[in-house]
Every structure is written in structure tokens, then in C-alpha cells.
Length: 424
Image 1 (cartoon, rainbow, N blue to C red):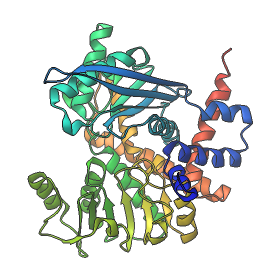
Image 2 (image 1 turned 120 degrees about the horizontal axis):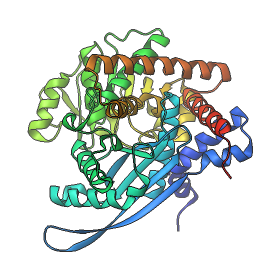
Image 3 (image 1 turned 60 degrees about the vertical axis):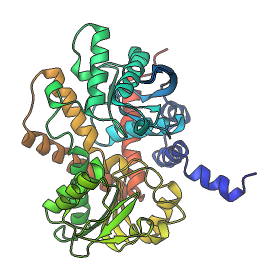
Image 4 (image 1 turned 180 degrees about the horizontal axis):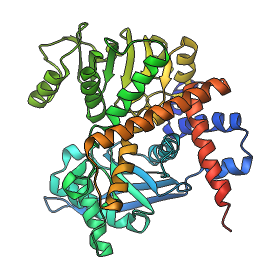
């Protein structure tokens, strides 16, 4: 039988409950009426599919997949597809809701959606992954489309996955429909600047936060937790403009150098060895302790629930810039707020990816593609403008940055719903 403490921790780590808690607080501060809250709270659609796939050894296996469309009030659903043994419907629900608020925070004309398939890609061949992807796409195809729901890569999926999804959709509709997914290869309608976009967005808002706090970016100490696409790219870009990346943390180890790590060399080391362990340019640290190093910016860029009620009191960063989705629990938020930690919430900090995905969707629909300088300039303009809006909202309403971001997002989505009215 679970103890009260165990139940409380289980509830704290439930991503859907976390999303609801932030929603409730923001909605109450905005004074939204009860009926509108009901509309905003619940997903528009939840699709569960069971995917039969023949494995390479001839066995037939059935995988479970989800696609949740949280809101399409401001435009087509938008959100990634993840492949993981840990995918749950609650997780996908929460991520779809976060996508709604994320798109609204940066004021791009998308709603929120998310998808996932319960599988372990490490145990599957490329052919098996392709068959899972194509069957999953075919099963949810009636709900997809450039004007309905636009998918993107996420955990354990990539531009090849998106190419398979785009091709499957195109074969069914009878014409090439590049705008049905984003995060595609450049040769199939992808956008320049997309692989760097989420990390670049994190760098931009970290610079803005330091400026807001009167701290110099040059030489600011950064601890990066998670060295994948988001964390690795953010680290490289931040190092390039003068941040000092003092530590990088991964599941299997952490490396530290008080004078700053050579991020390019660390990236090469990981490519060659498959791990950041054994890197000659830094000393090894316990990955469970490295996140608590004193620093100017902590960038959690891996998974949900990294900063919790158990460890939030030990965080010694002046700024937490959330590169991952949901890395901080609501209880941990309260602890960080009392400590005076400046949190750049996920729905703002990592919105660079969906912003450039929006650019990709626009380019596909126009059939006219931009150079990378234009992509990056437009990304910076959007991130800087909406960072300022969130901070202003926080100061005006006397709330922390996360609740301010939720309030701004809810306000924009609620306004769109009021303008459209309720179809009956």
C-alpha cells in the first residue's frame, strides 16, 4: 500500500496534473469564467491507436500510439511525435496542452497537439521503425493535415521519421504535402536553422534574462543538463557568444571545468565514444550532484521532472532556463520562487523550435524558402519581444514568470475562442 508521501510524490511527478495546476492558477488570476475554463482545460481530441507491425524476425507485434489535439482555436494543432517505452496518455495530454500555451506565448497561429508511440527504438531496426511510423501515420491520418494538425520530431524521432510521415500522408492524399510535418530534411522542404532553433531560442532568452537582471552574458557560468539536440546545441551557441559552459550532465556522467569546457571538443568526444565520460578537457563529477553547482544559468534540457520538491532547495543557479518540457514541478516552482531564482519557463524558453517550425510551415505553403540569416533574425525578434511581454506581465500581475507566461497564453487563446464563439 502506498504511503501518503509516495502518493504525493506520484502526483507531483504527473505531467498532466502539473499542467492543470499551472492552468488553474493562471485562470484564477485572469478571472476567466468557469465555462471558458472548461473549454480551455480539456483536449479537443484524444486518439488511441493499436498498430500491428511485422518485425524483422517475422513476429507480429502490436504497439500502442496516441495523438492528442488540445486546442485548434488559433490554428492547426502543432506538436511532436515521440517514440519511447515511457509514453503515457497523461504525458501526451500534458505535452499537447503545453504546446497550446507555447504557441500562444510566442503568438504564432497554431494550436497544441502531441503524439507518441510506446516502443523502445533501441531494440528496433530502421525497417521496423519505418513500419511503425507509417502505420501510426495511416491510423491517425484523418486527423492530420497542413490545416488540421502538423507533426514534428520529438524524443527518439528525427527528420527521417518526418520524411516517412510526410510520404505516407502524401501517398494517401494523392499529392506531395510537405507542410503536413515540420523538422523534415532540407531536400524535402525543411527549413534552414531548424536543427539549431530550440537551442538558439534558449540562448536568446538567457541573454535577455541576464540583461534584465543587470548581469553580463560574457563569462556567465552555465550548467547544461542534457547534451542532446537542445542542450548540446544551446551549449555550442552559448559558448560561441561568450558564455562559459562550466559543466555538462548526462545520464551516465558529468564533466566540469571551472574555466569553461571546449564544447566542440566534447561533442566530438561523444560522437567517437558514445558518452561524455572520459573527456580529457574536464573532470568527472557525479551526475546526481553536478546540477547543484553554483552558476549563473542552469539549463535543464533533458526530460520532465528534473527539479522537484526533493532537490529544488539545492539549486544554486541565478537563472533556470528550461530547455526541456516540464523539467520543474509546481511544488519546486514555489521553492525556487522563495529562493529568488529567475525561471524562464519552458513554454517560453524552448519555443524557438516551434517558432522555426512555423517558419518551415509558412515556407512550404508559399513554396519560397528563406536563407538562414533571415530565419535567425525573425526567431530572435519573436523570442525577444515575447520574453519582454512575459516579464512585463509578471511585474504587472505580481506573479512569477511561469504563471505570467500561462496568463499571457490563456488570455490569447481565450480571446480567440470568444471571437469565434461556440459552434452549436
